[in-house]
Length: 92
Figure 1 (cartoon, rainbow, N blue to C red):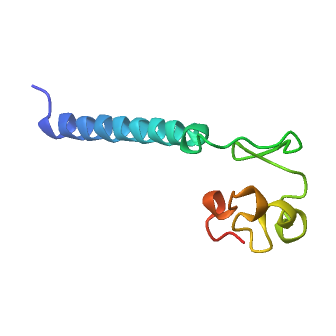
Figure 2: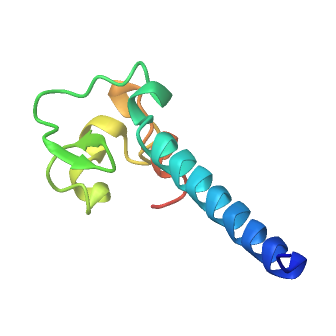
């Protein structure tokens, strides 16, 4: 007769493995849905740098210098009406 404790431990290991796989799949699916989260997102042609699946103009790491012309001095939308904070939260 098999040891019930060994069987129980194996089942726990299998369940833990399955939960890990499900969580990994969930993270992968969520990370691939950028475009669906922002269906109105249609960047101009000069936005050629991909950052986390969203296209930006070069100089994106200095937004207060390079992005304010279109997105406004406070990056809240400016003349294009697209706030940088929609994607970046309080990053800046």
